[in-house]
Every structure is written in C-alpha cells, then in structure tokens.
Image (cartoon, rainbow, N blue to C red; front, side, top):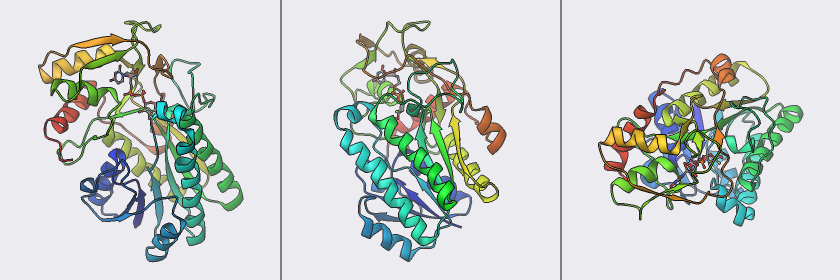
Length: 324
Ligand code: UFG
C-alpha cells in the first residue's frame, strides 16, 4: 500500500514516515522544505513541491498510485497566524483544497488530516472531548477548522473518507535518535527548556505566572510523537472498514503546568534550569487537556508514553545529538 505523506520532512510527518516504512508501507514524501528538513526524509522518496503548485500535485498523482494521503503540511504558529493570516489561509486552506482536488481526480478516497486543539478555542470544560464546541480564537485554528468542515462536505458530496486528528501538545523524539524536533524559530516549551540547558537560547522565558491554575502557569497535555503517529496508523486502518468523516482528539489526558515541565526536565537532565517570569503570551488558553476516550475506543489507540519524564527523556536524547 503506497501512502502519500504531505509534510513528511517535518517534525510529525518524518516520524510518521519511519513508522509506516517499519510496518511495510511504501511512502512518498511531498514537502516544500519551508520548515521541514531534507535530512529528515530518511526513508522513501522525497518530492520537493508545494501544495499551491497545482501542476506539481497533478504530476505527483499521475506518477504514483496512492491508497491514502496523510496531510501534515501546514503553517502552525498561532502568533504568526494573527499577524499574517493570509499565509495561513493560503497554505492551510487553499493548499489542502488543491490536494483534495487532485485526490478526487486520481480517485484516492482515504485522507488523514492533522488538525489541532486550536480548533476548540477557549475551553468550556476541564477535559476537551469531541463534543466540545469548535470556536477557534485565531486564524491558525480557523484554517484547520475550515478544512475539517470541507471534509464533512467532501464526504457528503463525493464519499471521501477522512479522519481529522486533533493534536494537543506534540512532544518528544524518536527513541532511536534518528529524528527529532528542529524548528527555526523554536517557539515550543519543551525544546526551549532543553535548548536553554545547552546554551542555545538567550534564556528560558515563562510566559505568564498569573493564570487561574495551581501554580499560575499554563497547563498543557503533552503527547509523545510516536503515540501520535500510532494513532495515524490506527486511523488508516479504520478507514478501510469505516465510511464517513471522523474527528478524534489526541492527548494523554494529563495536564502539566509550565513549571511542572521545567521541574521534570531538571529531574531528567540533572541540570539546573533558571528561567525568567514574563508577561502572558497572547492567545494562550490557561488549560488545554484532551479527553481521548473516543480515539481509544474507536481506533483501539493505546498511547505508551504516559509519563512526562519518558517524553522528556526522548527529547533530551535528540537535543543533545541533533542530526539536523
Ligand atoms: N511557553 C513558555 N515559554 C516558552 C515556550 C512556551 O512559557 O519558551 C509556554 C506557553 O506560553 C504555553 C506553554 O508553554 O503556556 C506551551 O506552549 P507551546 O508553544 O509549547 O505549545 P502551545 O500550547 O502554545 O501550542 C500547541 C500546539 C499548537 C496549537 C496550540 C493550540 O503546538 O500547534 O497548542 O493552542 F496551535
């Protein structure tokens, strides 16, 4: 079974490629390398191209016969989406519309979409399940929700089967050290904590100590990258036997504050981790924790990295010896 991985040179997509190849699937990565890394595509063919380039997409679907498409290509910085929304609507919405059009032209009917907790907006309940209202509060979240809505219409009108997987906080790295997180600029908490130990950032900043949480810092649900990828495998298999357009929330169901993450990183690395307390970062909800009961039940998904320490250990391994 040949699978197209859009964004296979990126953080999550590259781990997905590794897992699919290990399972015996053939994969083709399509990536414009705007944020991904050529070195991250260690398995299968890399086709460098952009989803906004309809001709390149059409050529790709002419050359290969795909059984399914997994779509990881997206702009994904909340702050940037507020200052430059055009980039988000173009890449995330128009780019995906182009991809779906070529899938239809080629008769490819199974689609796995990387969605996000940002489609929910401000949480109205402690744990966010699939029934939580989707009212995004920034263009990034809106661009992802627009695609989710397109997918509903594509199923109704064209019978295209899809699964949207809404990630909470993707974290950690390939335990074998072949892949990991490498963004420029880096905005995420765990890489910034670890890079601060290595002297690779000017100093660790904690954004906001006055949230209505136990220690005043934001609480997030960190989910290991391999657990996320396993959910994609399950979703791929699910589509073989289930019609429809589905959405699942993916998290561990445990919330950790920024200060708890820093403390766990001290324990894992044995290093002191000084930080400065800064004002809140715009657009950060105080608490985001998933209820992934539905994914566990429907997909048979069983995340393995329940502890924050295990997630940090794999990330620390990568950040000490990054390959790109
Ligand atoms: N944080 C810091 N210092 C840093 C980096 C982050 O204090 O150097 C804080 C943030 O303010 C936030 C928490 O750590 O409170 C987690 O921040 P991340 O940037 O690691 O992750 P987010 O929760 O902001 O982002 C995630 C996904 C996004 C998604 C968003 C939805 O990575 O793709 O959730 O809210 F859009």
